[in-house]
Length: 290
Image 1 (cartoon, helix red, strand yellow):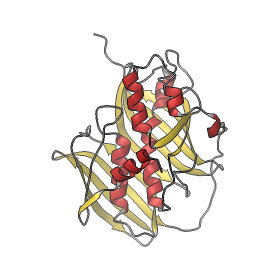
Image 2 (cartoon, rainbow, N blue to C red):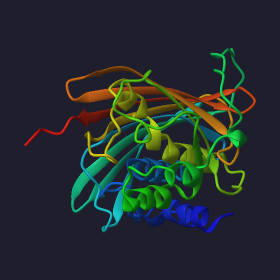
Image 3 (spheres, rainbow, N blue to C red):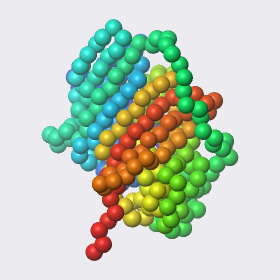
Image 4 (cartoon, one colour):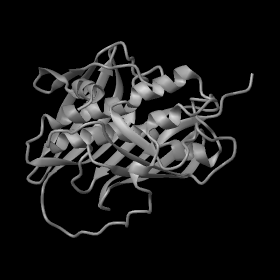
């Protein structure tokens, strides 16, 4: 296991300060606020630690309410909304400086057999044939060195490989609003299913709005041609998966309007099983000309 992944796991290992109250720390992100994927992942840790071990996460729905302060701890309070025979529901509110910054509802289910079908996995190249993040990012002479290093530090716990050029790699002309990324953690994880859900939640916020930028030929915050932030995020966990094995994140944007952009995606295992569906809306604004 890489030191970066070990540090990320330590970050996600919340301190329990009461039966249903947890405290987490933060670290600097690519942008000067707490990374949304971190807050969502920590909230899932808090929710999962109040759920019986035989119940597995099957969905989460979250709202990002305020920018998080990376210099202050985050307190997560869990409400035990429902404990049924098959399903368990939890609500988590993340608070900083006396104000809620994030809200999450998560549902867990006892495993059961049922009807089974899925959308087929789209074509994608073998991840081992694609450039790594350091190889790709350090080849972009138009990005400031400090921007490249912030990207690399933020993603060093995850091996994340774009199938095509990311928005900040080639911009200026609209492209198809679709992006594919392969990812896995930089090291093996324990077998705890919740841990793999938490790591997938963490990574899911890294690239989902890329397809919005591609549709308009924008490079994103890294080149300063848009400003934005995540608004809400939803995930459905369909089938077992491991976040330390290659996962294909197939993303597209069906709409952008009103200063907001919508991204939707499917995450497949390398052998073609549909593991996760994801939808996110974010603020995507063009900076005003002075």
